Image (cartoon, rainbow, N blue to C red; front, side, top):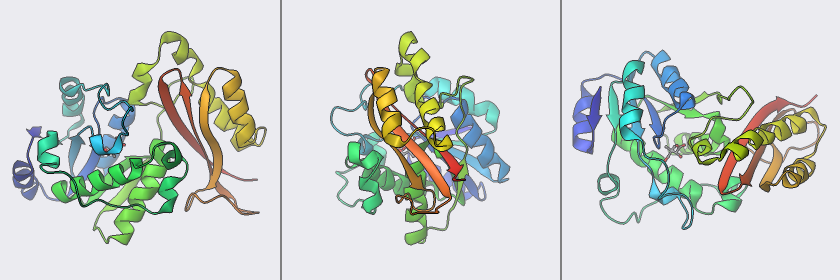
Length: 269
Ligand code: PAF
C-alpha cells in the first residue's frame, strides 16, 4: 500500500495502476468506511482511499479542530483490505492558495443539512471535485449515510460530465441501530445509550406512526436538539407530492455537543 502526500506522486502511482475505484474519507475510519472500500474492490479496479479533513466544509465553530485524526490506525485498517493507494495530502497540497474557484451546488444544498450548515455542500463539492481531478478514478464510492451529499455529488458528476461512476454504499449500523459515524466517538456513555433514538424516530416516520414534527418533539422530549426530521422524494430530495412512493426520511439532531444525522429509504404504501 502506497501512502502518497502530493499530487505528482499520486498521478505517477495511478498512471501504472489501471482504472481506479476511489473512496474519499476524512479518516477516523470505522466498519462503515471499510464496507465502502470492499464495495470499491468489487469493481475489480485498484482501490485508492483519500484521508483529508477538509476545512472548507466546516463552518467556524464546528468541529474541524477536534475532528479525530487517527492516521496510523486508519492505514493499519486499510492495508489488510487490499487498498493500493492512500492519498493523504496536507492542507497546503490540496489548497496551496486561497480557494477562489469553487463549486456552487444547486438550491437543494441550502435545504436539510444546508439549512443548518451554510456553505457545507460548497465545501464538499469543491473538495470532491479537487480529489476527483487528483485521483482521476473510474468509480467513486459514497455512503448513503450522507444521503444529501451523495445526491449532490451525483448531480455534480452528471452536470459537469465527469467520467466517473458513482456507487452508493448502504449505511452500516451498530446492533442497536445507531448509524456508524466518526462523530459517534464524541458521545459520552450516557449519550451513546440514547443515540439510537434518532434511528428509532426515523423508523416510526417510515411506518407512518409519527410525522416529522412528531419525531422532532419525541427527540426534544428525550433531551435532543433536533434540527430537522423530514420526508423527501428519493430522486431529487424535493418534498414529495401526493401519491409519491419512493421516499427517504432524513433527520439531524444534536445530542449534547454532538450532531448526528441519519436517514432511511422507504416506499410509501
Ligand atoms: O463524507 C466525507 O467524509 C466527506 O464529506 C468527504 C466526501 C470525504 C469530503 O471531504
